[in-house]
Amino acid sequence: MAKARSQFLCNSCGSVHPKWMGKCPDCGTWDSLQEYKTPTPDARAAVANRQTADLATATQALTLEQIDHEDAPRTATGIGEFDRILGGGIVPGSAVLVGGEPGIGKSTLLLQVADALANLKSQIPDFKVLYVTSEESARQTKLRAARLNIASKNLLVLAETNVERIVNQIHKVNPAVVIVDSIQMIYKPELPAAPGSVTQLRDCCMDLVYLAKTSGTAVIFVGHVTKAGTLAGPKIIEHIVDTVVYFEGDRFHSHRIVRCVKNRFGSTHEVGLFEMTGEGLREVTDPGNLFMEQYRPGGQPSGSVITAAMQGSRVLLVEVQALTASSVIGAARRKVSGASNDRVGMIIAVLEKRAEMRLAADDVFVNVAGGVKVAEPAIDLAIALAIASAHTNRPMQPGTFALGELGLGGEIRSIPQLEVRLREAARLGLGHAIVPHVGGKIPKLGGMAVHEVRRLSQALADI
Ligand code: TYD
Ligand code: MG
Image (cartoon, rainbow, N blue to C red; front, side, top):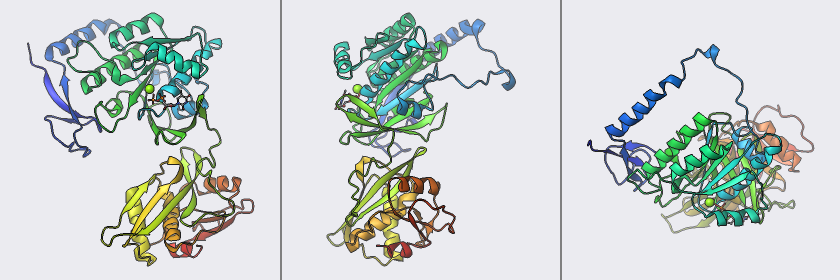
């Protein structure tokens, strides 16, 4: 019998390598390569035979004109924030991956989604949802459902880890949507690898996606992201599925941001916002000032600057906080959470060089409050002002917020969607905006005073 060929797959980025290495050469993660056995030629021949047998019913090549171009009909789940991330609802026959760290709320969200879908029966006859739990027992799922007040009759629960039995049940029940929680715990008995390994993860996922495409049943996978790397990561199946969404942030904050990173059926810019409560996840529909509960109308302390970040098509007002403290000479630390480390490093350099601020002997800490991550350069100016305000120990004027990208020459560059951000800030009662120079093209927004600046030094004069 031919020998199975081994390849090594990176848990973190999914790249393939011919031999094992301590560090993935593509993404630089240590100890992330895992052995993956490619099917033997015999197994491949079996697959080819099966495909030949399918030929009679095989699909035909079509011209674009012959293809039905109707928008794929979607099933809205009724949980608005979840539908928003998916681009309006679940597409039949699609595969969705929901990833996140353990304990962040994946099972809670999907049980709620399953229930909301199962309650659609009144609109769509014979609409069933199958929730496959491979981590918890059916009893545990029942207890969780009781806690979440879920008791839909069209929601079926299956506690199973063998993928063949799961497929059998799907054929038997014929549900419209199947949820597999989690993909890392299911296995295929004929594979010589442990559940959670790259080989198992890929093959089980392939089988279920194949089933989704042929039967029209939508499949939602849950995948754990673990830092320890003991489980193969969801990255490995990202290319197999149609839509990928990740829970962001950590479980120590009550708010959860669910971000779409890939979507074959819609935009990938959307985020969903939820709050973890005693009765499961609650949607947050007006997130405006969600992340600045601590906003004090009387004024912010030094080192704190409000800014407006775009999250999908929505504006989120966030508070950037900075602290500088004298450090051991030559060992100054820069610690950043919620923003880009590299950009903060660059901003500190610009402050040193263009604003003559001596920060080389100081530790600098920057934090975006509330556990939200903001990657866009539009918050550069807010970070720069927060550091400057902390360094000089002078707070910003009450009701001030700042927007703008910082250039290496100390210039403030324009940012996308300036007006949308200003409108949201005006709605939430902020009275003074520091923005990039646009030549007075900003419409009057309530009583908001808009200060257009071309250079960092002009903005610093406001502190
Ligand atoms: P869970 O959905 O089990 O996380 P995951 O499937 O991503 O591992 O969520 C676990 C956390 O959520 C747990 O720490 C308890 C908390 N939780 C609540 O706060 N309220 C609730 O109603 C539920 C069901 C869970
Ligand atoms: Mg879970």
